[in-house]
Figure 1 (cartoon, rainbow, N blue to C red):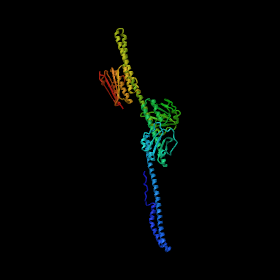
Figure 2: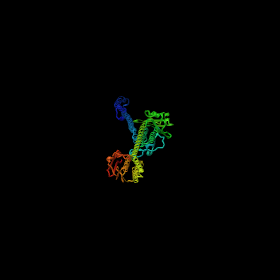
Figure 3: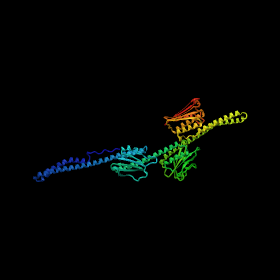
Figure 4: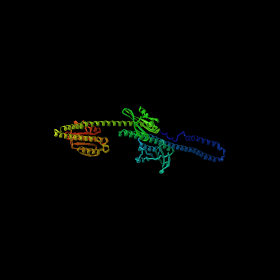
Length: 598
């Protein structure tokens, strides 16, 4: 968009130019005619004695008068033209300024349409408002938001060079003003526009001018305020949507208990649309829907019961749907509006989430976001189910391992002791010396099995790694291990150790399995444990036991801990670390594991 060039002076087709041309062409001829008429006609009417006086009067008065009035007429035309040109140039200047402001306003509208965040939006808004209005300074004030949308004056120095200020503070009340102008501090004129969208107060836009702002400028401020309010509301909603998605994602990662997971996920989704009630129906192993969790508007928590017809209809297929008042009341007592969100995965229906609230609370434009949140909830449910399934498998495997250990170790030893004692009972009268020896052997075997049972119990004892942290847990376990097994254990910790929770669990599991193997197989009298921090965390366990051939024991599973050397190596290497075992028969064993430290 460009402006036409301003008209220039000297154009031949103007009224003034035509007047000058007409005067130039006709005035000489008119003078000639008047002189001829005077000399040959008019002068003969007077007395010859007055001829000199008549000539003097004619040529001394008529010529100057004609010249004066002619020049006066031309001067008036020139003045009128200059006045018109001044007015035209003034209008052109106003039009140019208006054009520049409209261009700045269009640029501002484009910039605030899709800002990255609220901080960027305010940066663009205060700069664009100054460029569009020519204000000396611009200040945007926003009311506080529950999710941390308040801004600080961190950029005050940067804006000072432009005469801009950006602030945000909590406004407890909603001012009732609109646009107003008044003489402010320092002789400047203040213009304020309340930022409001649909009756919701968002803040104010304050502008300071060196000169009184025109009505056009005030209208421009109103237009900027309207666009800025819409942009602020859109940005706040988008930010809240992202926060909600993040919270749901955190629920997927952090929670494994199904009931707590459903309470957290549905609570996050319900809070996004101000729903007062929520429920989650999940399919069981037979594909039947069951109410796993529900929270009514009065706070009552419930589960089980009949599945409402509205939920069954949603399970049959289709997009999210809004229930009728009767259907909503069947899901939540006393609720007149409900929104159903199906949860579907690759294998079909996972469940249905139902939100309940006041009539009109579920806007159509919010449905896509809620459907996306329901998809995230589907992942959370499937993740929790997979975790529970793997936990059941682990429990089953651990039970089988304990059963094998008892059958192969303790049970057979006890059975052997029972047979020994039966033999002793029959031979005690005939061979008392042999009977005493057999009793002593049985007693030694029983004591060994008691120690084996204690080792198993110690290995199965739960360790609260999250509560105490890696270092304290290692210290506690090493101390208890030495006391439990009568082995001298020396612990050395050096450097800074900062591992992720998953890496800490791997390091402790390696320590636990290695010490269990020492107790079970090494017949060691002392063990040295070292934990060193640095670029990598290094754990080493060195014993003075009988040692073994690693090539023959690589795939063997420890009876006490449940993991063999191969499994321990796989765990460490899956975390980007290195696992190494150095042992020879008769020369003890050294186990070393290294993990990168983030």
